[in-house]
Structure formats: structure tokens, C-alpha cells
Image (cartoon, helix red, strand yellow):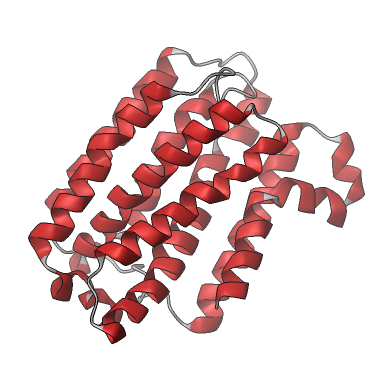
Length: 249
């Protein structure tokens, strides 16, 4: 399972480069085209894994009628709308062709990252925790740290200080979203929230996803409340109920 996860994570994070290697002609196309091709590769790979395992329901792909405590989803929605508002305020809408290629990418990223990390990896770690009699918090933290570290791939084309901040805020993001998934079982809703958070950078000029050369302290601070909320939800829920979704068919 570990090898499968690593392979899919690498495929997702290096999707653009993989797309170029599979179809060398892509290297002559715009970065937006390569990025879209790479994310499609990641989506197909992750969807193939979940289909092969038959885990769509296990990882949280169920209808709203099976969501638990849907009011808890208000927190990620507010975070998403705040980030989207920042992006809209600095939107660059001058190139419709670029936007047509960029705008689907946040949803694709939200799908493959949430399904692979919050779905597949967290599900596996929860099964291990359940069998060993441990609570859910360790699995949540472990999966979130892995999610943060995956962003080290951005060192290829981004300043180390900016990437370090991204690793930290992605980890905090992961704690919040993992806890929310355990409490709500609403992975599709979290995918949409993730996509809205990423949509802001997509509206800005190319290359603006990681801004500046410095450590992005503001972004780290922005995700601290979400992580704290996640820890609170897990503590309030209790370990037995937190891992109850691992028994769903």
C-alpha cells in the first residue's frame, strides 16, 4: 500500500513532467496546457486505484443524505470563500484562453489530492489505528504531515522559503480537512472547498500560486484556526466514533 501511495503521489505531483515524457510534443505548448494534462493524469491514476480497490464509499464518496453533521462544513466553506475573495481581488481576466485552461485545474487538484491523501492514505492509517487500539489523531497528523511534505516537489521551481511555508500550511490544512472528513463523511464537499481555495491563484497571473521569495507567514497563520478546529473536533468526538467510517460499506 505504501508503494502504491508513493507512486500515485509522485505521478500527481510531477504530472506535468510526466505528461511531457509521455507526449514529448507537449513541451512546446503553454504551461497551462501541460499543467492541465498533468492533473488529468493524476485524476485518472487516483480514480483507477479507488475503483480497483472498490473504496469509493469507504473514502467518503457518498451522497448528502449520508453526510454527518453537515453544519460543520461551514468552516471550510468560509475559509474557501475568504481565499477566493483574495484571489478575485487580484484577478487577471485579460486572457480568456489561459483562464479556460486554468480554471478546471483547481477542481482536478482538489479531487486527486483529497481522494489520495484524505481518502486513501487516511483510510489506511485509520484502519491501522483501529486495529491497534489507538485514536484517530495520530492518523490525522501523520497523513497531514505527508501531505505537507509532498509539496517539497515545488522546490524544483520555487524559492525554498516559500516552499517551506507551503509545507507548513498544507500540513495545517490537512489536519483541519482530515478531521472534517471523519466527522462529516463528506469528501465531495471538501473537494469543492479545496478547489475554491486553489481557485484564487488560478485567477491571478501565471506563476502566482506561490508568491514571493520569502516565507509566507500570513498563509501559515491563516490555516492555524482550521487546524485547531480539526483537533477540537477530534477531541470532542472521541477516538471510537472518529474512526467509525472505516467500517462503512
